[in-house]
Amino acid sequence: KFFKKYENLININDYNYVLDESKKYLDKKKINKRYIVYVPSWQKLSLYKLKKFNLYEKHPQIKQLNKLKADVKIIAEKNGFHFLDSDKYFFMLKNPLKVFHYELNTHFNQLGNDVLSNAIVENLN
Image 1 (cartoon, rainbow, N blue to C red):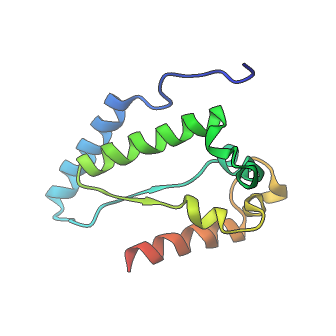
Image 2: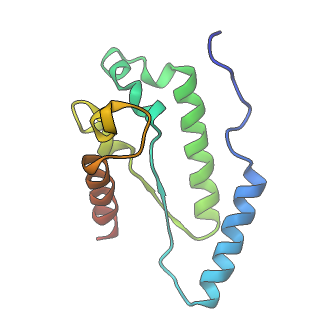
């Protein structure tokens, strides 16, 4: 009851339009390798302690964020993009919030950039 539930966190039609236009542009440039990298939000990472109690997937915000991720994946693949999910790379850390400055909702610090870049490189190989 404390969390606002939104039907969709993404406007599916708008996102599909953007990726369709990107696809057309990349087709003109003859670029065949296309990737969408899903980067988990601070909010998603901040609830990591719920995992050890098996409550993480049940949390209302996590359900919404996972639906968002699933929608992005469907639209990405529909438009010929490879979907790279970087969630697991951040959750391998003992404290995933260490990837942010002061563990607050800010930009990634050096560790965060390293985790993200390693996830991308591993999936490109």
